[in-house]
Amino acid sequence: MSEAVSPRVRFAPSPTGYLHVGSARTALFNWLYARSTGGTMVLRIEDTDESRNRPELTDAIFEYLAWLGIDYDEGPHYQSERRGRHREVVQQLLDDGQAYLCDVDDNEVPGTDMAEGRAVRFRTPEGTTAINDVVRGEVVVDHAQLGDFVIWRSDGSPTFVLANAVDDADMAITHAIRGEDLLSSTPRAVLVAEALGATPPIYAHLPLLVNEQRKKLSKRRDDVSLESYRQRGYLAPAMANYLALLGWGPRDGVEIRPMAEIIEQFRLEDVNKAPAFFDIAKLEHFNGVYIRELDLEELLAALAPYLESDQVSWPPDRYRSDVVAAMAPLVQEKLRTLSDIEHQVDWLFCPDPAMDEASWDKAVVRGKASVEILDGVIAALADCPWDPDTVKDAVFAVGEANGVNRSKSQAPVRVAVTGRSVGPPLFEPMVHHLTREEVLRRLRNARSRL
Ligand code: GLU
Image 1 (spheres, rainbow, N blue to C red):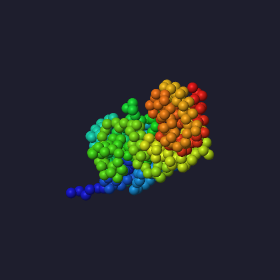
Image 2 (cartoon, rainbow, N blue to C red):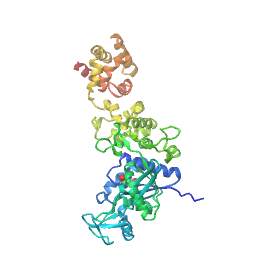
Image 3 (cartoon, rainbow, N blue to C red):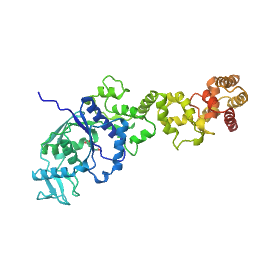
Image 4 (spheres, rainbow, N blue to C red):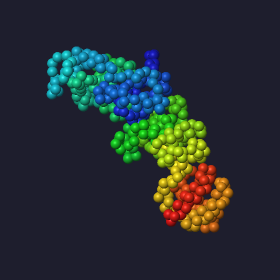
């Protein structure tokens, strides 16, 4: 019996200045495989391209892996620091006759001395290569389709395929889990590995991520950077949970669950090849579930950046954290993203909350008896005791006198006071956090619009 080798996987991103949701999914699947098998997770930064070899392009990778809770056991290795090794391998392939030098016009030139201005091509033998991809099954490629491909550029740098194959071999990578867009480069990497006498890793190409039009996610059309999701108020555990389901699902069908359980359930062979729909509505739903699980202290800490930023619509001196602490449990259930909090509480801090015209139109202009209700409520609230139950009863009584039900009598009051037709419970916060004068002023303003 052969001794089982503990898996060694790698996340091998090329720095771009941001972490793409597809890359994050790749990182996560490698990590899930390592953590579910007791294997080793290696991080390798593929920065052979000079223009990518800049720390500011790499920082986002570290920042967002940490945010998602994806750790690694080895690395980061920097491909740019392995130039000497890559050169040595190319020289060896030249010496063995498995590669040849080219001039600027791409014609083969005799000799084996690597020099400035000389590219090197791999001499692809005749035949076929079969890749047994864990996800895609057997993929057979005729070498005639590959031709002799460049492994060393005339500017003295290795190509992606060369560096990738050499590093996988040197780092004893057993499994290469990565995006489907790289499938077409795989036969070349396998040929290079075999030319070096190395065993190529087992490949698993993860399905394409598509948007709702079933088109491949694109930076131009879609929100693809993890940073934008974080900024809009997605929680890391919700995001990680959601990413784990892009191309994979647990056998028991339970989708929303702690990462420890996902690790337990994860099987690389259960990854499917159908394109995975990056469904923002589903992600929002997941996020809502995770937001509801926060206790008050965690919720307030998570919301703070959205309330204390300089983007908010209220004057900073009117902000009151005690009001938010009282409101947070009332609105927790409604939040899909943390940034939703602003519209739940702005009316308590803005002297004149912006009027949402669609709400105004729906609840007031088309609302039956809005004039009568606003006039009646203004009169009733002028001197009634200022407590939530009394105020609520007074508003409903005005509605009843005008033949409209409770929700229709509350609607014009809500729009007048908050600027919107939907929002948190109205009466308690309105009476506790706004003065009678303030509420009356807003009601009169609304009345004067009619
Ligand atoms: N560096 C490649 C990329 O960012 C990935 C290479 C690999 O996973 O094999 O697209």
